[in-house]
Length: 336
Image (cartoon, rainbow, N blue to C red):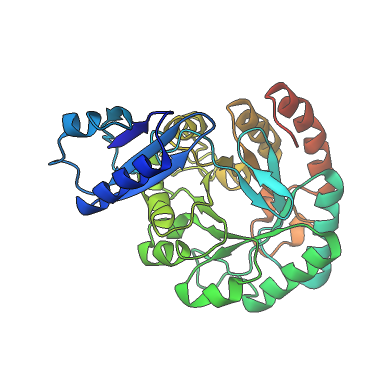
């Protein structure tokens, strides 16, 4: 249930109403916008008399929220959430590009790529230290050493770092990581999501390979309900019957998510198609449908990459793409 508060309401009236909500066994979620204050009533509101709530002095209007996700719902939080990281902003009015290799392989590689993507205009550096792979024989990442190398790349460039977590036990290793990424395979690792909800650190949550958009929002709900509002949703393609590309990029997810939720939405065209020459077209299409950011894989030697070289752009290709994205961002009213 959503309660819209009158602009004339006093702080004493508001405090009294919040106390009444607690006494009813509900949790109030307060969202103060530029001109409107909204209170979301979290819990079982089925027995709460809607007309009784509407009759209270501070209440302008009352609306039922039918969707199962509450805190991530735009009805409870009409203003867009902006996630700020190291001087970069992800959210409405910005097009934030996060770029780097699929896997951190060595110090020379990650620092070289970091310098190249920064020179081209990327706002953040991505790189996998822990790598979930289909085959147990494939490269699994440098793990803790990979995070240390990412930190060295940050020291060399100033770029905030984004890397994927796979296990609750690894959380202490991510203390100095700027954004923790939850990959597609862990989107419904609910115990991990609960723990990330207790952190004061942004989380980039990727949609699962075969998950619905409502399931993605419900996974985000776990993190936000735990007290961490800094969640970034990521569309990275879903598995369909089509085999020409690695996955099928669902660009309709972007406007849908932005209409239903206040959380920023980014797109990963690299994992979506798995083919480097297709990445620029899909990246530009993502900007056209309103994405707040892009995750793009860049490798200085894709043919020698230990993982996903086929979908990685070379630094010069990435630089050309960034030049092509700038006028599109300007047309969309976004800063890069």
